[in-house]
Image 1 (cartoon, protein in one colour):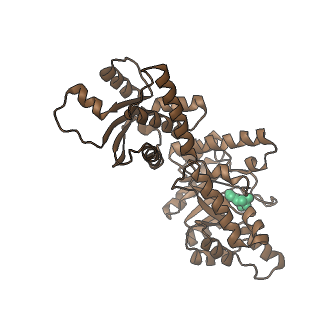
Image 2 (spheres, protein in one colour):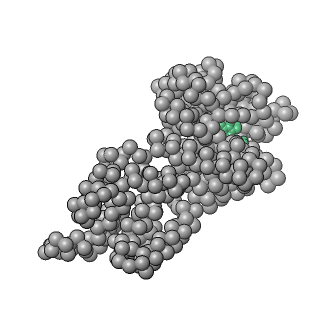
Image 3 (cartoon, protein in one colour):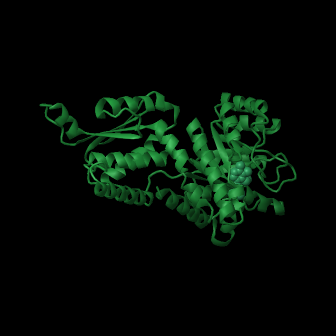
Length: 400
Ligand code: PXP
């Protein structure tokens, strides 16, 4: 029982998060009391949907969605076979049209597909906007209500929260003694629910030291993400200790923290070489970039597994207009990267106010957060600071 997706050849030009759509359609079916039924969903291209529209509905044009209720199909062809009671029928969507509509409406492809799935499902359940204006209005209202309820429903997929413990090392180093230990901090973060630990081994070792890297490699139970500049010495260390992944960042000696994203487009050759070396050692590489199309494209072109989108400008934005603009840049870069097949992380400057909207983006796999959590930990304790952030991430991913 449930929804069965089939993706045809041409729609594979788009990257479809099937799991996410599956979750949404199952939720929609449950909401309409047909969770114990089957629905078949076929994602096609314009050419195929035009053919189906013409062949089965005598309409010689392309469209965004077609629905063929099982009962109707059988009536039309006068089947004498016994009809499986729990079959709702087929929903067929042109991904090409959905993508064009998404761009026009300024929503993500998955949100547009969700709307089309809702529309198709209502048709399968007997609604028809073509019968009368009254029915059209009822169907439209139902769609709006369902989508709005879905947006506030619980989702099972939330971005991973990876915690950067560099600042614990900064406090330790200020005294030149052994406390507080980032190794202990990482363990507390994991016990409180962190899905990964991030450390930045800088050339000047201003916070994380070589000893920390070695010990953390042995003690981290989740995933170790080693942030680093593409520098010869650090590359050798990474290849030796083999973190679960590395994130390449630009590194300037005088900066307080990583200031901007990597200019991948401007140093493709050098970065591609580093990615290749890591690849050979089985270490996936993430590139920390500004949310810009050309950087996403360049990251994809040189074989990165992940991009981490720089959220600093969004977090630092003054005023709602500016923040919204920065948010939209992140949302569309995330969608673009996801569509190219990249895994998408995000981070820098995220705090207890700014994290929610980023965590709600369904294309984001992992959030990398450091300063806000360690700063809050000074007052409320590390365990609680992590749990509070995790709750924000979890609640955000419930919205859709
Ligand atoms: N991601 C990257 C690539 C970073 O360089 C940093 C800062 O070390 C972070 C995420 C975390 O930023 P913040 O400490 O502001 O949460």
